[in-house]
Amino acid sequence: MRISELSDRTGVTVATLKYYLRESLLHPGTPVSATRSEYDESHLDRVRLVRALIDVGHLSIDRVREVVQALDHPPASRHELLGSVHLVLRTENETGRPVDERVTRLAWRIEPRSVAAAQVSSALERAARESFDLSDETFATYASAALAIAERDVSDELGDLGAADALRYAVLGTVLTDPILVGLRRLAQEHVSAVKFGGLAEAAD
Amino acid sequence: MRISELSDRTGVTVATLKYYLRESLLHPGTPVSATRSEYDESHLDRVRLVRALIDVGHLSIDRVREVVQALDHPPASRHELLGSVHLVLRTENETGRPVDERVTRLAWRIEPRSVAAAQVSSALERAARESFDLSDETFATYASAALAIAERDVSDELGDLGAADALRYAVLGTVLTDPILVGLRRLAQEHVSAVKFGGLAEAAD
Image (cartoon, chains in turn yellow, red):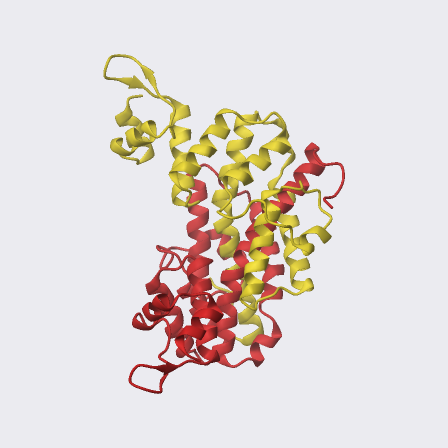
């Protein structure tokens, strides 16, 4: 398809698509003349991924480029692949931080330089600094809820996908479903609060 | 205390504190001379809250002002209070959206104009648009994990706090612990992936 059709099908303007091409977020099309290139389904997928990373994941252009480079050179093992996802989805100051003792006590199988472990440790420290230290019981509740979610996320089928597809699935899945989880927690708070402190007598219809 | 001590104890520069005062994010101190005001523990608490909302919650100055105004005029009922929290912590385009059928099927006690319900619906729709539609089983897993978390979040003690304290607790709790939950999910993914697809043989030490 021409760049104008790629624009129509993704809802991204031609000017923005050209910007993605210049910034290496989108791989070049196949040249068919001096002024025209042809794009295919792989470009459609890539543009949608880039939009999701920017709009939902709030990633910078540089970080999106890292994701895209990881997609083009995926690690061989399924497990390393997840480490790449967490690395590209990290926020600043989340690497190389000492791991919180509560994280260590979980005794999960975590790499010593795990980005996710640094992220949790950083968030725990920040909360404690605001006099909002999590009790051991609350941390245990959060960890077991997270484990139930992860058992569902890391499906066995992931092992059957090609490396690039598995990586794309894991990145998109994490970026797109974090807001669902955060929202569901607030929704559940509303429900529990209505039950405990009163509120609507009937379920919403 | 003088503004310089407030600055030392919060790590926020005097210039920024003056900006917070001008923008009504921080309530005025008690004037003790033409050029000096006295600040107290309530100012310490407020500055820490404002920092957390900006740094961790990524709220705009206008949104922080809404939170602060809600704190100064808290609703009487504990349940309405949670609605106020969700309202000030909403992201754009999350109000007035039709509620997703999967949310309705939860049969939780949710207000018809619930901000949290709109947030979940919007996130589900966005994921579906990227061909990442959640299966009913995955949604059910996420919802029951969220419920376990919320049962812990909305503690009975919340009913015993004064309205302003309860609101402050709920706002800070949500802003500071969302990143812990999001991080724990990734950490749990790493663990499950190591168990399923191989990786470290031993727990991290």
